[in-house]
Length: 447
Image (cartoon, rainbow, N blue to C red; front, side):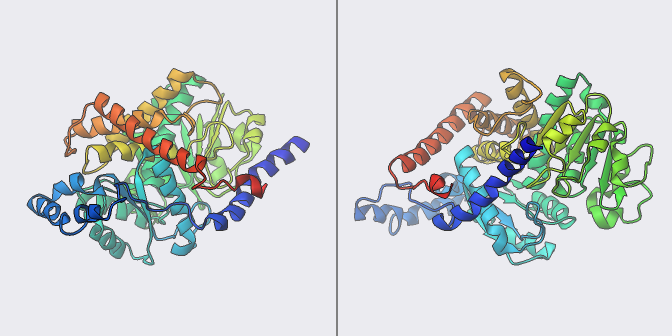
């Protein structure tokens, strides 16, 4: 019990520290010049009159904006604040710290300049129109923390109507890293990936997107069971269109046996549990884990607290346990995906991100971990293994080129070198800012 209390206290430390540090820094990102400005004469080139010649080049061909401006490396992180982390509908202002954190990860892990944009608008049609008006300024769009079912409609509509990549990280990012982790977990437990019986608890944006990508990756949908607050989802539910919109028909392909009951029934005989539900602990019990098949795989990914503590799942017989947190082994978190994914698609000025690209990236991430040496506590790479991100970029870029959706053509090797150079520059820049004291480190002062 003493050990458990220590672990619980340790798990609560980041929340306490965050509350102290954020007001000291007053934000996590800022904009600085990337061109020399030591002489006022330079402004005649960067601004008027010189800039007018650049404007004319873009008038000739709007795609030149990817060559002459920062658009090639900029992403908008957009949220309406209706489904933030495990906090729910907290509004755009309260969502801003999360979007700033996202922008920081974009820069540090992918060398991507990302801008948090929290909007006071909940109507999906209006959100679509707002995002579309931003297209000329950005090379990509990252949708974040938008409630279902409108998040499905917004993503699919914008993917069809915009000529730059639109990505909902809660959907595609989470689905990609979950797929990658499941690839490797199935190898460790000695089970065929495509034959896995999978129980997904939580039918929000992450759960539905993961279902969609698993089926695309050739998992039998009949072997997948989903549950939400109402219990196990069967074909007899009368609210499928209302709750899941364009994915209602996909839902109907799951649960071949048409099981019903509360969500605890979903664990019976499952090879793998994937949780995107209510933050725990206690949402999932040891008895739930004991109902699963031999050598069960448990992904308790609720944020900020997993549905069941990892040590409890292990005590109940789980072979492999993963969470969405960095302070436990096996962090199944979309932060491993989006920085490299966007690095790659921005470098080839891709027009979209497809499900095929997500699967290729998932395989790349899984392959990286396998080369390092798989174990029960290492099924996906860690965020500090920074050389993963150029590899993801190369996989994403080369996949976009193969699919014919890239404005520029780079080989896998060319993008690997290019992404490594860009990310290394960013890491060196941020390290030097700390070394010189231009960015002060207050972490130890808040202990």
